Image (tube, rainbow, N blue to C red; front, side, top):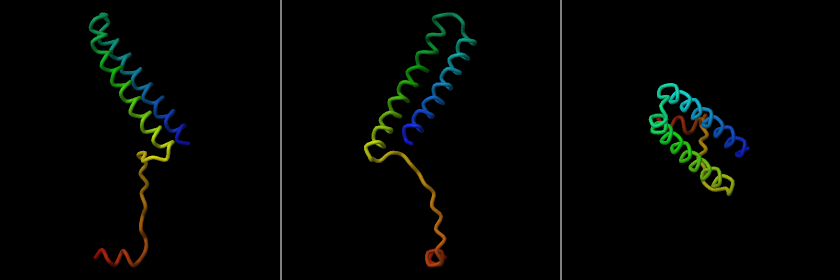
Amino acid sequence: MITLYFIRAWFKALLGVLLVIAIEYGISRHGLWFLLLAIPTAAGFVGFTVLMYKDWKSSRANGSGYRYDIVRDVTRSRSRDRW
């Protein structure tokens, strides 16, 4: 399942970057200005991809991936200790 989460998140990021690049192209149609805007966007996407890959790789190796679960404690003994 982790692989599917990775692919889904990566495609969402890819669609976001493509949308941003399309907006950048609409704002500046001149080649040099477009490159000045698109290169940092593409570099950020590559950096994001590398970080996602490292997290995915550590999760696949039973490492410490970033997964957060919210647990609600409903036991009476602990709820009395708080007050």
